[in-house]
Length: 447
Image 1 (spheres, rainbow, N blue to C red):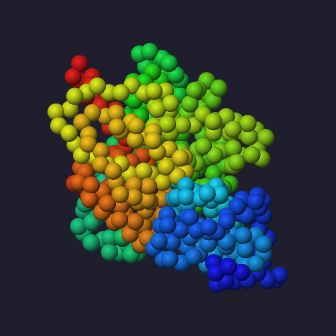
Image 2: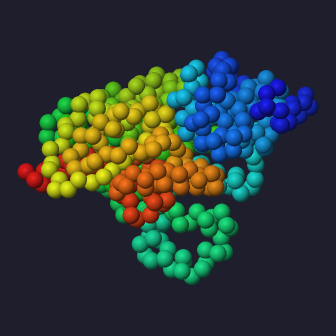
Image 3: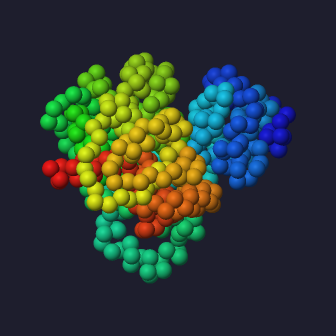
């Protein structure tokens, strides 16, 4: 038995549970891991602890031991699987092509099915967020609007000055300063359901997301503007809701499948050349609906077509040979680029956003040290594992500061928030598509 497995409780006939998810997993995927160790230098948790079980190959050894009946799925096992950021850097490093993304999602689903990490508080928050707020667009908008009112009314500042936050549990008190600023207008107010360019060449669907919709609706508007500038007729169904990425990454594959069906139903797939996403974490999930819905006779074929048509905005723009802006800035700004994990590792997209940034006049691009290393956001990891997330945040912000850049571009809402919260107000953090939209507008103003 390997070092990764030795400390975990051996399985016994009387207590070993019947596996509900791992038993259906293709065993050859688990066997693919050669234990070569190429994943170790890129795994944030292993680099932090230097403990084998905190590495991808260590976790895979635990998964295999559980499937083989050598160990039980216990609370310790579940906590180890949730200690993983899911950054997928190991997939880029792996010479054997191990599908770690599927392995970690299926294993977390097993952990939830076995209920080994149970606590009444955890169960309540998962029900409230995953099954209620992020499963109903109206509920998410209601929460967003309430939080916006709380922020703009001055009540937020009053509560902070009053000391009332001291009454909160320490975990919530520490998170409160990182509460995102909610936009005044959500995507449905900024974007019409159908917007047409001057000269139509393509017809695309636009995904507005959930967190992106509430916190970065301006990026969604920028994305539509850029698409229009490049001859795309844009279809943006209102009240889209969450794509299920948060559910899938947190072991709720049943609700993830429900969300996938809902979002597919919002678009007429046959009429669209592409379906555009501008959120890296969502995009990584959105491109894999077919495995999620493979046993659904009504949606299996639709899911394959969906996966084929979903494109990250940078991927699509490079594919159609986007128009290079011709504005003439008076000054040059120093900038750098952080590669969001689920864009570079999950979707294997790296050259495309860099090509867009390189085409922008008025910027001096400085390479960021460890640009592909996780910033610590990782979905809700900065909430569930704040200590480890904080260390990664400090490392990322420190590397950004060393570049001397006043602007950092990144293509994921979680990364945007994580870096903003770590760097403060002196650094502008923005999406590459927003910089391209600004260049187009400056070009029009100069004309």
